Image 1 (cartoon, rainbow, N blue to C red):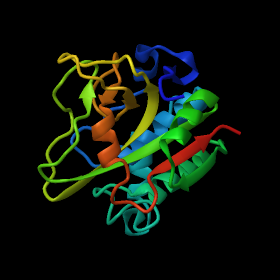
Image 2: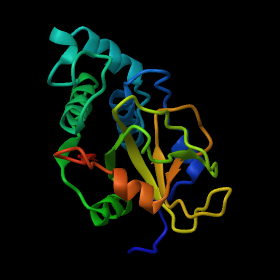
Image 3: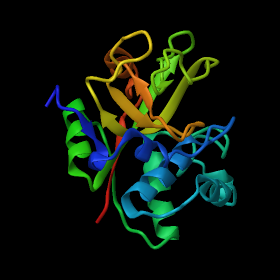
Image 4: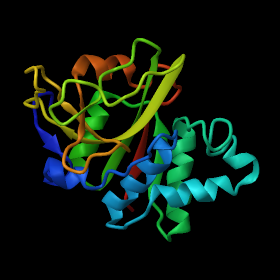
Length: 210
């Protein structure tokens, strides 16, 4: 399966990218990823903003069930899974949601299934951030971090033929909560392998339509 090109449900890159929402200059990537995942699976039009507002009204701003510490400091993997479950419940949806320690094989299998999505966590230290680039760009859309950082995205494609403007292979394509409705955000094999869940007990959330 290592050299098979897989786009979720056989969609085009632009079709997948349409579901990306923009978190702006916030740390709400988990909330926007939750909305994007449910929209892909159920054909809904849920907004990450609604989940941000909902968490803001919880005790301690969602700490520790939904957020690391307060509503502005992001979420780790198990908290992101809780966000997906809650957003589903608030909208009458009941996806099967599982935090897990996955493998590259599992990621590709989920892409092939069509009724399942993988939310992945990348983590990194300052000055060692991975490159996550829009389309064929060779520069990263990921900003610098102060000490240690993380980001949650939805895997949308695995395309061994995808290359950036410097003709380097970038096979892993993700829906990220940044500006961009025409292209996914792509990573090289090396950058993804070295940053995927390296500082996390779990490295992914599997979300399945039931």
